[in-house]
Length: 203
Image 1: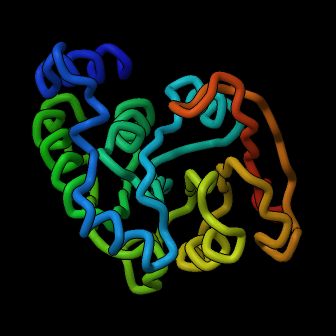
Image 2: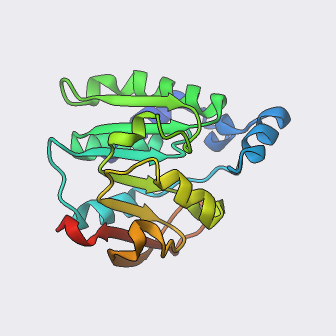
């Protein structure tokens, strides 16, 4: 059902003549701004298959808040919302991509659960006062980030029990975690290494 809704909204938002990813392209000034603060303006997304795999591994309930750090155009975040019914938080630095996510969620509102909370925040994922601070599950597409940048971003989510990453972060949670790995598709490649890390005290 969640995938069907995404396909429907893609049909509404995107022209068949135009590759949809171009809607998330930034002008030169915005690219330079994103790159200057340690982020990466290159766009990429996790796949529904990767999110499905993660959700098979972890418990979610009404107390779960799921965050996408670097949520881009919001499609992964929306899929998480549709699949789980949980509160979701997206943090995106780019104004262009943030606006695309707002348009997507506006169209998707009738498909969400009654009272389901979604927060789309335009700002730095390094901001410890951002809405991600209450998140218990975090996904971060850290393929293009340095280890230091990714760790600083994850430090803004002190309540996170489960973290999905694309590159190893052995220092997360002081190394006290259980790791599950797989190879699943992203927009970059068909067999991307992915790691789901759960704090040792989160079982």
